[in-house]
Length: 376
Picture 1: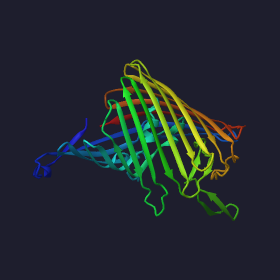
Picture 2 (picture 1 turned 90 degrees about the horizontal axis):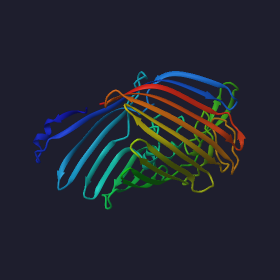
Picture 3 (picture 1 turned 30 degrees about the vertical axis):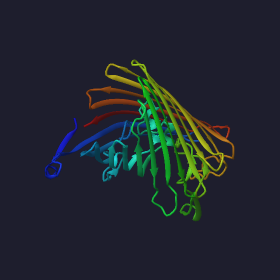
Picture 4 (picture 1 turned 45 degrees about the horizontal axis):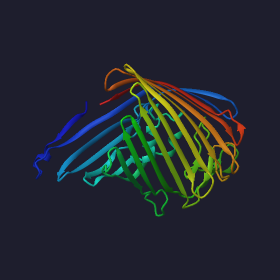
């Protein structure tokens, strides 16, 4: 149940309306075991306690005010939390900003996930939670600062249209993007498509001093690269962006709810608009409720095509132009509801790199976690 604080000062407003601030949150804690296999076939296992496995731990404040004439003002202040790390600071999270809605639709400015993130989340039967293992199509979207989103009124029943604009707050256009979304729902069917185009900064390199050899070394940063999924601690870059290059990101999601089960399909495609480099993934899944238990399973495949310019800070195998990296991942999420607000869960994720540039790869990552999630 969400708790409400009544803002007494609002009683003195001209409209006489009472403003309310709602406090809500999520706490997610889990026991986690992660096993990784390196390119050389060496395996390591780590065990830990943490969050961000079945959703972020977060604390939020939100509210709205009726402005009259069919218009409403809204606000949100949301923080992500790390409850198992001493001294960690809350950070601004999804749902923070100001909004205005009316007959024209709704507009919001602040910090939010972009349209492609939500499209990919809809397509994931395993919940699209924080654990990246097995979740390959998550590359196409993310949390954006300085994002303006617009949702149009429904001119056609079941059809929702939206747009977004991101400003990178730089003296160049780097980080700026524009995106669009269309979603149609009818009974148990949902179809959603979204796309965005982001202007990139030039890929950067930095010089570092290697204390073990006494020599200078060069590190290639991946801040502006098209990179495949990081598996076993290794992420292979497919392309280094030139200043002003574009990253086109497209995502599709189709789901159908039969009642006794729900099926999922998703697709995402990231492409350097100046070269042949791209990263394509597909996801299939099914979920089913069984009393208080819900089980969701997702299987993903990913293929990355290199343009030969990728710079890799992890010293992974270089990929020549036109060569590919092939990966697959799967994830199982089982939840048990003690109540509407408290849920226990088990999550299993496995990701394998089948080949790099046509050569067999041993890279793999596996995670098991048992956790509990509480919302209020």
